[in-house]
Length: 107
Image 1 (spheres, rainbow, N blue to C red):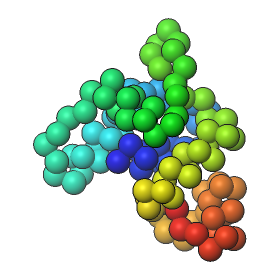
Image 2: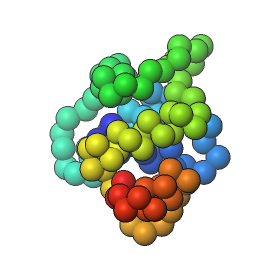
Image 3: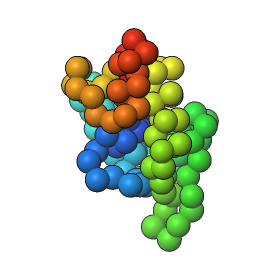
Image 4: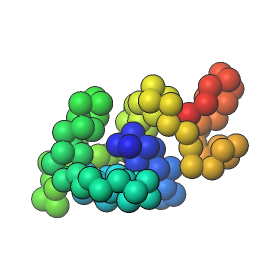
């Protein structure tokens, strides 16, 4: 679910970065939508995201993920590895998704 939430944030228009807290909110929303009673803390989500290979930068407001092209590609690779599908099939959201369509892959 962390990969799914990160992919969602990656595809949010105008987003240049997000905080681990934002990621945790999305994960919690996904859990609620799937009728799961578990609540994950920001710290746990951050640790899970780091375990996936994405590292956050400590700033005054918390831990921030800058959505550079390399980080966006990394998030897409993680999503592919966990077979996370885009929220709306058939819509190309970014050039990373377009590249997947050309290669015959599904996010």
